[in-house]
Length: 75
Image (tube, rainbow, N blue to C red):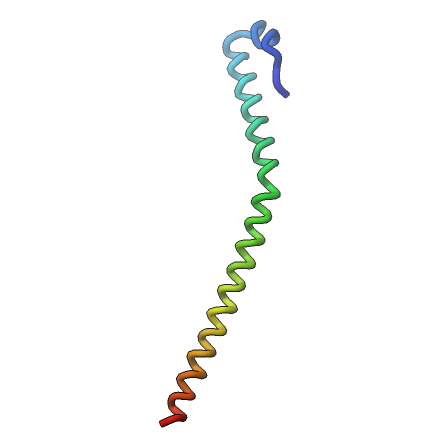
């Protein structure tokens, strides 16, 4: 919770610094909380991309093996 200027002025310098740090920490926590949905979406996209890459590599490995065996049959 943000403190009013009037409240901050009545505090000692050390208490004022602590109050500002507390406010900054709350702001950071709020920003991180707002980033969570975006991070979750990025993780899901990353997993999907990794699985597609894996499927593609498996498919191409099979194609290369099949092409190699066809070339041997042609001889």
